Image (cartoon, rainbow, N blue to C red; front, side, top):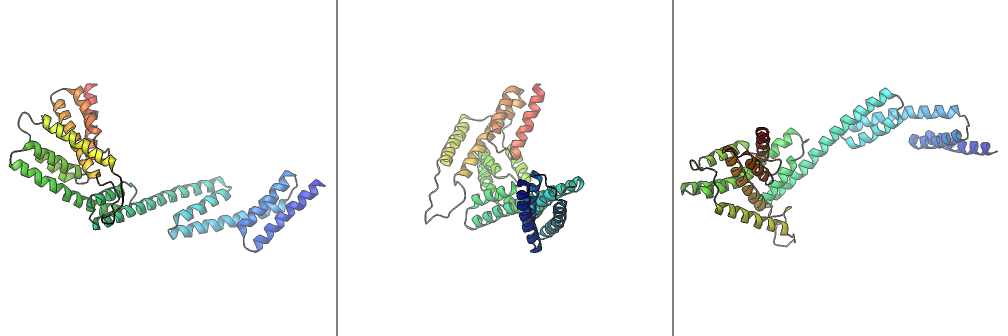
Length: 331
């Protein structure tokens, strides 16, 4: 009696699935067939005709989803295409075909990641251009550099953004280079070096200009005492660093009608310059001790210098190379 009741219940799900197939709703039909299949299975009722219906339905669904995935990929709808392939993988029983689908999913996922990175970078780029138009140049540079953090963006977009960043960096750096050269003309080497350091802090993407500035700085080192740093210079750098850090941490954005809204803490650039300047002093001191054979002290100072630079900066990478060389020498 119980088996008969279950058979009737299973038949109702199966019948419902048949009607859905006639109406073209194959996905829902499959769900109804699976309900019937489970009822029959639990009560050991054999229904080979249902198994055949499911097999035919699955074959048709695989064809349907594969074609859909192909078309969606051609249309650039990569996320939707991935969904189709995931369902196709679920339907597939053949192991070789499964592996082929998995390979395609992996390739499409990488393509989607590249596209999303490009779109995200483009948003930062557009934000930077808007800020530039509003007069927020420092904030615009930050947005452009954020766009460049995405490793998967297209070469064309990367080239366009890098070109704009280089131009803006050079514009900012030139302000400090001009002041540095004025100090040089008046024989004020310590002040000149401080301005050169500020200029360098802007030249993250201008490697050639960085090298020229560094060479220009080297010419200002007095013979025999090039890397000595006065107490005045240390105190000034520390004071500037502490003051800019407090300003940066203490900033609280409150919109005002007469203020152009910018997307970053306005104290960031001053803090970054002060941080890099102090790091530059540690770097000079580290190099002096290294050159004079005080390797352990130099190693400690290089580590100290590294903490003041962004890990992605060329200066930071150079410090890491120096640390590695020193460790090899010390043994």
